[in-house]
Image 1: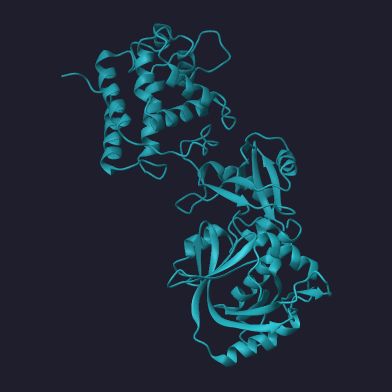
Image 2: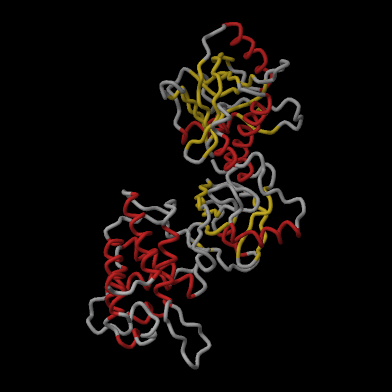
Amino acid sequence: MAPKDPLLGTLKVCVLNLQSDGGMVTDANPHLACCCELLELVLRKGLQQPVISLVHRDYWHCFEQLTHQDTCGRLSALSLVVEQTRVCRKLLSAQGRGRYLLRLALTRRTLPQFIAHLLHTPRILEWYSPAVSILRNEEYVEPFVSLLLVLSQIEFHLDMQNCSFLDDSWLLPVCERYEVVPCREVGLVLRYLSGRVFVLNLIPGSQAHVDKFICPGDIIDEINGTSLRNSKSGQAGLVLSRLKGYPLSIIVLRWKAKDGTVYRPLVKLLQILRTENPTLQLCPASSQQSAAKDKSSSPSQCLKEGRIVYIVQFLGKANTGMFGDKEVLQDAIRIVLQKKQLMKEVILDMKETHLTCTERSSNLELFEHHYPEISCVGRYSQPDYTIFAFCVASGHSPPLTCDDAIPKLLQASCYWLEPASSKHMIGPFHRDSPETPQSTGFCCVVLKASSIKECEEIVCRIATGFKHTEWFV
């Protein structure tokens, strides 16, 4: 009976677990990291170091040299994998590049071809010790190749952008994409530490503070395709300044792992940040991640496409004629309440440039308004303070599109944020204009939140939404 190598036996169990799971293998699969680590151990076993060299040899160097030692001319697919790995700016070490290549080869099902060509390339195969290596042992290499063929039959769908920590660990952080519309400022206070760009705080009133997507302690990994791995101090600011006025797509690495604990490779770095900034709060109550975790216990909020949306009661509407300033809100709310209309449970979704209201039971959209169309917003001055309303332009003329409604509204109004925070209102100062359509009036939309805090938060978000879209439109 042929002797068994313990690495191959463990790898076989791991491969069978992946196969038994069925379907597509993603980064969430609990057996993936173990399988990759075992493949790495097999490829490193018996790999000899050069006698005179300042570079520590790793299995990445074998794959990299494989394309240069090609004598058969059939390595085009493998060369693409090697080149994509080589040019990835998020990888700084041979270990990181080797791990990236293994993940990419699993995704493209090319790992068996890599090993087959390595076994037929003597100049590289001689780097392995015949006495220790699995690759140079005829009894071991055949079952190893068979396991690779089984892996090539499994469909892997791995996030190749999430690779900045492969230099340090096979354990990957939670990686999410933050989409930002053009705004005055994103509002991130950053700290550059050990080649990472950490978020220390969010500026109150900024876009990031309103969206509640990024949390202190998270890492800005990439902005619009530009990697910030190993970036110098101030580089993120330079990237953002070049992209001012453009939509942003930011790759965020979370400090919190999938199981709710601190992502292990970040423990020491976060300790340094806490020492430098004792007031650093890693888990703010308003974080998007906390909301996702607690959404089952908080029926008044839910997640939609990565945003927090609110479940509120739609009480009705009231026409206010040509008056759209904040003084009409209280009377309009009273009129709606006196009608005692049947309340509807709706989902209020406040996006970057507009808000939508959808009936929860039927998924029917009741209305959609861009922020500059809203003339004022405020709460009802009653003891519970959970009823709020906003005035929006309406009229007998056909509804205007975003492109033509907003300029006409801006000609008629000058928007400002009232400093008296106790009233929580914003409103316009109207002036007559011959260009303003005479048929245009205002309508007051009345809704009810589940709590005073949530009502105040919604009012502030609507007000801030106007501040962030006013200049851009």
